[in-house]
Length: 300
Image (cartoon, rainbow, N blue to C red; front, side, top):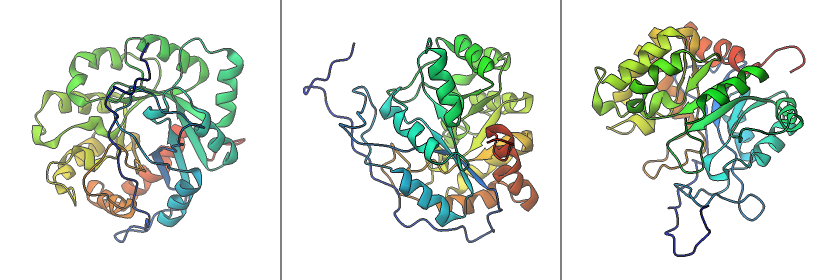
């Protein structure tokens, strides 16, 4: 058990998001657009942080997130349980319950939860489970088969926060999963490794064969920095591999990032380079995400 010890060096604080998000300037956001990746973050003591976290964020309130969606023209959003809150999904679930038509959620949970707790998560709008091997507070891949079985039982999908360089040995196992799965931020892949890198080629193969991928997190993958032009060839290849299984996410409030703080509107503008075809871009923002997360379904 990890003890709360003042002798442990505190996780570094990271800055908050740009307080003035704006719409993209290069295209009109379509009605029904979905931001498929964001976090709400509380503050101790009401919402404690895990002791083994990799960073210390400021608050990212539900009100601020909804305001960002409104300011950027996004209709719907998907909240992903943030690593610093570990398996305490309470703030995310509260936010989902208050915005049933507009939001969906991806939870981080232990195995063995009672059926009533799983049913409550599903009723609130949780549609998937996240496995995270990059940041403290997450769940690794050692129980992957068990989580896949649980997701199948509930009609959910799995979402992976993983470095693409770790994909080659996992590729065959992931390809056999009985549920859909999504790779966050196209595998946190540093573009300096090039398109011939074994990890990126494995990701590309998985996407061709049925995986979903989030076209997101350019600032995590770039080497050059803003405006992230070095990410364009990689994102285009992923989209060309499976245009029907690509979705877009803001990654708001951009935690664990200490360099230039981007505006969500600028990240949307980058999507015009990643997916130059307007119809294909609209599909990424709407139809694909609606299908994966269940927006627009009767009774949702």
